[in-house]
Length: 528
Image: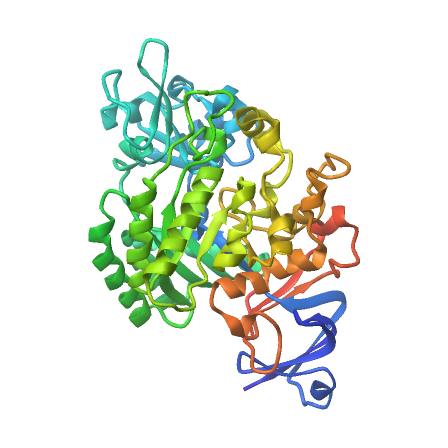
């Protein structure tokens, strides 16, 4: 067993110290107690900061890794650029039957409605399927629609919308589960080796960002073998908990499936992998008009969105999986979605025996004022994706016109929930948005775009301090993970560490994202 000594400014999560010693994956000593130890390696932190490693409380590592292998459409700024990239990739991969990629920017065209014929100009003889970066919308070409049997006569699915032209034919944009699945269910499955490679890509990205634990917040049973195989091969470079997606149409049958999959992961997944969570989608997304709202959308007075579950059914399912010993993780964006999620958790708490649950509601974009105090009262973790709390085009072009000024100014109530005593964790929803914690921390602290807009911050009363934001991305996520030995650095705690090139507490807030991750350690082993 080797001993590594870190010297410099060390933020433990419970205060600062100057020296930390690590042996056998654990913190051996801190402060003056570490000074006299013989060390095999000494890391001088210079002007940087060592702190508990970041965690990501809501992400999709496999999806993020897979984006590496398809057309590189993320970040492209015009439809023409996307179409050209699809054409380039298709020409370089003539044997690929389906061209599948992500994540295009849905704000590039009005209302996020993309036409199949634009993609036909690049590829007409093979199906093309692209996901928007919210992963709630699909843009496909005419051949993909043909293979899926989507015509003018296809009825609107119960959970989803086929966007249509004036003549009733499918435009090429599909929204939400049942509509997207009309095409996605036809896409051939990926071989396990490719999925393992995708997890390797994801792990490298996480390590370079200072991350060592991730909640995979959308796992289908067929994804489990890839995780187990990655762990077996040593290709898993981060800790992960898998959250199985509960389907409102077949959740009763899924109960036994999930229990079996959880047991397999426990037996074969090794020390880095667990599968203790069930994920529920309470609603969709505001930019697509599918988030569940208490009052109608401003641009669609006939619609309050698209709840994925009837409230009573969600409560019943949450209580059932809670009774099976699973942790609950609920996607809720609109104020009706958040209320339904809180109601379901409250029903499980009142129905099932008392235990340490730490339920999670993810995204928490719009909360009715009457529901804010329920998070602390019920012990519900509010998992925010802080990078979203800025006035970017997703807000100005899509979300705000749909919800109106009054509701827009209640989005992402981070400081309100922190001050209420509710537990708060941070995540990225990668690949929906950047996996880099420092970018999210900058927005949480400033509520400004990277260009500095607005100068005083969007809803400045909801800004966090740097310490609060660091806590949410470290100890807050560790609490969500039930990893109490990673919430702070103390003797015996896991040596999951990140070394930053500068101390975020003394850097200009608009420069936080420029801090460099100098090193990442997973259980004492350096991964970056």
